[in-house]
Amino acid sequence: MIKNKIMRTIEFWDSLLFRISNFFQYFIYIVKYFRLKKFLKKNINLSNAHKDEKCFILLNGPSLLDHDLSKLEHEQVFCVNHFWNSNQYNIVKPNYYIAADTSFFSKDNVTENDNYIDKILDLTKNSAKCIFPSSYLELLGNNNLPEHVYITYSKHKSTMTSIRSDLSSISSVFSTVSLYAINNAIGMGFSKIYLLGYDLPPWKGGLMPHAHENTIHELKTEARLIGDED
Image (cartoon, rainbow, N blue to C red):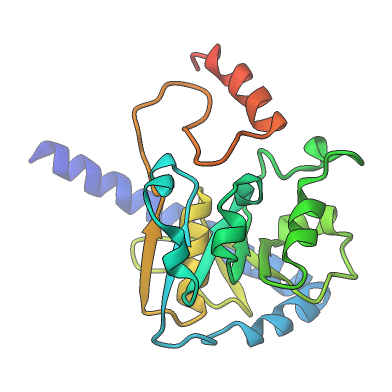
């Protein structure tokens, strides 16, 4: 009983603090709106584009390799983050590519000879739509985005009573690409959303196992985190 009361108290204060934060985020959104307008207006093409359809979101856990992904040939499919580095990409040929991991898709990890964003954009230019948070604008060049790239302004903190899935306005921000992908799918109108490769195996430090081969920067991050007890 006491534990439940403590949890409810924590949830209440978390929710209240998030609401206060969202109040200020909304004003920031208004200030930035004219700069973001052209990106958010473009997202109208995505909003409810798949109303009442089903989709499959391929996350990068090792259980993804237990499935015959060729069966998804005629389905609406999302892939995420470093799926470009998987042999499954050409089998699946996803419709949507979601990336939302600032640990790896950051300016510090992008070089002329090893640019993950360029690899994704080149891979998807004739086959899939890319959806990235606005924090990627610095990597994408800010203004002249490729036609198949969409930007969301994901700054709203979800609470117990409020999650924003409107892709043409301020939308909710999440701590994982899986939740970001789900929220985008909801904003696009999908009513049935299936997850594959959503693994939560036991792990300590470093990275969770992946179905794809870890990139150089993933391995560097893993090496740094393994020895960090904090």
